Image (cartoon, rainbow, N blue to C red):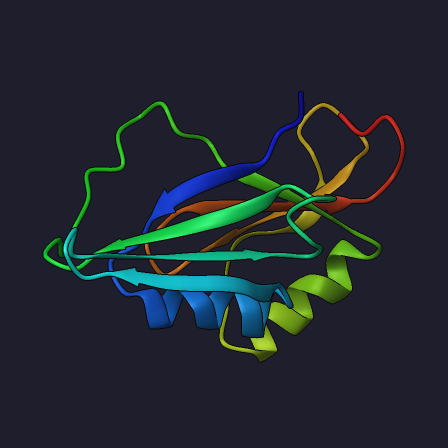
Length: 131
């Protein structure tokens, strides 16, 4: 077994793709419209779907907003330098909602970003046994 993807519902696919691809450097792996179902799926990630876990961005054409609920937390991306990544994200128009620094009660350096739909993205120092 393997973890294949995580699906996020997005209200504006172009804005979501700009964030994940242009701000976070993910690649658009594939995109397909489903006119009869009135939705589009776009898969983004840092590697091939066969070797990496990716994000499935689902755009339902007739939905303008979603209730985020209180159960969802965040996705996490390991980076070599959290501080530099925050600077790059801000320079590219991304939103940093928790600046880089040690996590509460720990030493791991983390930060939080927010995508155009309000989903949280944690970036953390890419080290073994992070937590």
